[in-house]
Amino acid sequence: MLQASSDELEEFETDSESQTRPVIETRGLTKRFGTVTALDHIDLTIRAGEFVSVMGPSGSGKTTFLNLISCLDTPTEGSYLLDGIDVSTFTEKERAVMRRERIGLVFQQFHLIPYLNAQENVMLAQHYHSVVDAEGATRALERVGLADRAHHLPSQLSGGEQQRVCIARALINEPSLILADEPTGNLDAKNEHLVMELFSELHREGRVIVLITHNPELGRRTDRTIWFEHGRRVRRASEAA
Amino acid sequence: MAAADRPTTVARRGGMGARLLWRALLVRRSRVLAAVTAIAVGAAVIAALASLYFDISAKMSRELRAYGANFIVAPASAEGDKTFSEATYRKLIAELPADRLVGASPFLYGVARIGEREAVIAGLDFAGAQKISPYWQVEGNWIGVDFDERRCMLGERLAESLGLHPGDKIEVSNDDGSFTTELTVRGIVETGEAEDDQILVNRSLAQKLLGMPNVVNLAMLSIQAEGEDADRLASTVEADFPGLDIRPIRQVSQSDGELLDKIKVLMAFVAGIILVITAVCVNSTLTAMIVERRREIGLQKALGADDSAIMRQFLIETVTLSLIGVAVGLVIGFGLAQLLGQAVFSTAISFRAIVVPATLAISLIAALAAAIVPIRRAIRIVPAQVLKGE
Image (cartoon, rainbow over all chains, first blue to last red; front, side):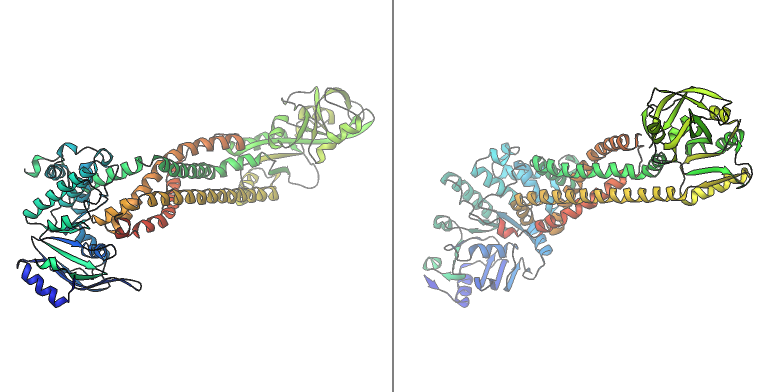
């Protein structure tokens, strides 16, 4: 493993990334909780069409990074540009607008509302975005292979199916960025494969996907892997390959 | 597909919000029931007390009037003839507002003999006297009709000194023994006042026995009127009867008003305590509901709900619970008001439309005040914390 300076990483990204439009750009992105620095001056660019995995051991700052780029949290220092808009100084209300307009979130725990059926769970994302459209929600469920489960409650769905509902919900508002936090962490191998296939398909359609995972196998299925350790971005020998 | 082709599939945001609200409440039936019950109990007490409050002046004034006469009528002149005619009395009664007149009786006083013993005899109208003196404690029975000349009532001290009981017969005669009659003691009356030493007989019998036909000494009236209103009424009537002195018995009227005020304060105090209890119940139930829904709220925020959307959602939930609770409470409250009305005032309480908005407003204020802290708690939920993967 190699520790990398910002300049080296920038050079590495320039080499390895295509010169498409940046969707995520962070400069000196830092998050401190009291005296603990969870994320330390992260410089990073993720461009349109990229499928990127973020890996690292527990406590390395992956989730903090995800919270910042998903506009769920604000940085202590540094800047974060989403689609060219500096959101690092946004208020909670403005960040809520960014979340509903530009970001689709996929969680390890699925986080479906237990008393709403699959279709209604997808419609919930529309509810905060614009107009609730049952047909659009059904199409999103078709997309993830769950058209026939639209009226099932989460408790009537398997873990894999619940995660696919979660992906349909993330897709429904056509976000520019899909962020997935350990999306296969609670799934068996078969469902893990199904979900990763879905992500690959979405990637082929040109969506930006950032996948946080512990699993190196999943990391290998992405365009590139960004490694974190002790809140800092590090370069591994395998990254250059 | 054109939007016009699928009108039923596109719902307004309010539709999804209503679905979310309905399901969220339905899935927490026991908590919803607890909150609605708390609000309903509070609303019922408010509605019952408000019904009594708005009805109370009339009802309580009527009831308090039952505790004694508040007007005395006597001849105007302090000297000379201390009587006035029965016809004048009847004319006076006819002139008084019938809907405010609780009861009235003329009184004629003189001295009579029971055997060798002298005693004050009072002639009165028993039916009217019963209405203006319901606090009299009677052993045996009241005399029910005004033409009964064969029975009497005795004051408690007089009866005791003579060793008489209800059912005993006594011989009553006038001072010179020219008129004698045998009377059956119908009841022994205890008033704590002068009547305890008197023989009470019908006015007509007293007039015969005392040789004073068609006259009375004074009249006692019980009328629903207090303070300046009573003064005005006395002046108005007195103007039509120059030979009479009509005076409100001031201390009785004022104490009526004070008692009324005290009862109103007591009602407000009880309502206040009930409201505080209701608010505490609603607060704890809403807090529990919000703690249970931390992840849901976090998810809603992660999906783009801002603080105002979360606040709106819980305000609507609180108002919905309040409306259900108030609707139930109003029905129970009106029933409770009837029970209280019958138990305390022996009368039905009229439905007054103002009770509905008053109960609704007071209950809503209490419920919304109780919801402030839980809603602030919901707004402060940090999605990044509650949605953390395990």
